[in-house]
Image (cartoon, rainbow, N blue to C red; front, side):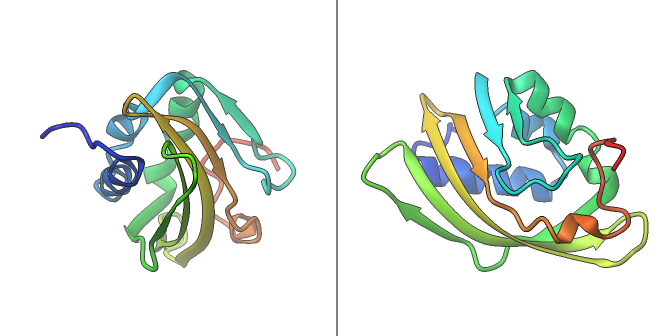
Length: 141
């Protein structure tokens, strides 16, 4: 498969990897010096991850805690900057620990350069991660 050519294509490819539980493949889409930010993260959750290694460490245990089934309501908006998109979506699935439904809304501002994510500001719903079984980061809230 050839590399996705646009930020929207790369983003959609990344969602497919997450649904396939391929977090290693998803992290491989990142530039080595990429930055992932979570402006709405609740206390005890990271607000900024710098570099692909930190992002990999953050995502490592994700599939053990959250079983994603779909990203409905996906809307990708082009911006004036051809390297930046704004994404609206939901992530739905179940929490592995409790079996409870998982349904989180997201808005993300994503920048792609040379076929890799370089900046990803993820404005996810902080109320969702207050449910038991959502803490895949190993934080001690």
